[in-house]
Amino acid sequence: MVQKVREVTTCAPRRYGRYRYFLEVRIAEKPAGVLTVILKNPSTASADRSDPTVGKVEAWARKNKFCRIRYVNLFALRSPYPEELNAHPCRVMVGRENGAWIRRSLQGADVVLAAWGNPNGVDTEKYERRIAQVSRLLEGTCVRALGPPTKLGYPRHGLMWNGELVLREWPPGL
Image 1 (cartoon, rainbow, N blue to C red):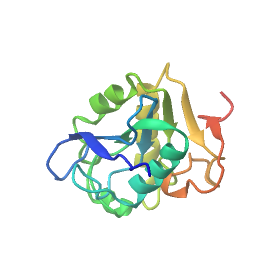
Image 2: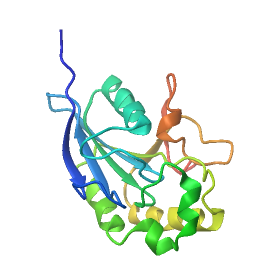
Image 3: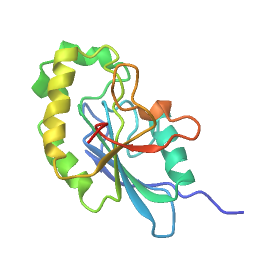
Image 4: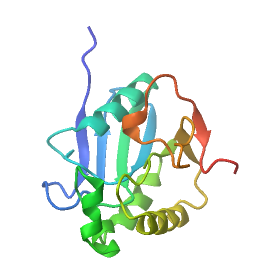
């Protein structure tokens, strides 16, 4: 029987706190593809534990033969409830190190997936502004999304990666 591999190789910051800028998890022994996933904001996953989104993304990545997953977010402020981000100014929601970690996550990535989903309570103006900022960071990078966009036109969130979804260009129509 093949034993599953799961090793957190990098978590920034390493200790659980107000922000999580970057999480990298090795899920296979053999060299294979590196996946960068850009989500909305971190919930509870850390160097020591997973959460439902990370679990769902890892299941998809295993099935698709990736060996490492890098998680970054539009907003680095932790909350399992995205609407709670609105209590803070954008600079606090984003976190001062976030842009640098997003850029780092792109280095050597075989696939970069936009996966932030609908705003789910995050102020739409702040959300759209942040997506535009991150899109500028991604210029020159081949970005994909999994499955069709949501009804609101956003890339499908990692929690919604069900069934046999196809990788598509992001934004659609490039």
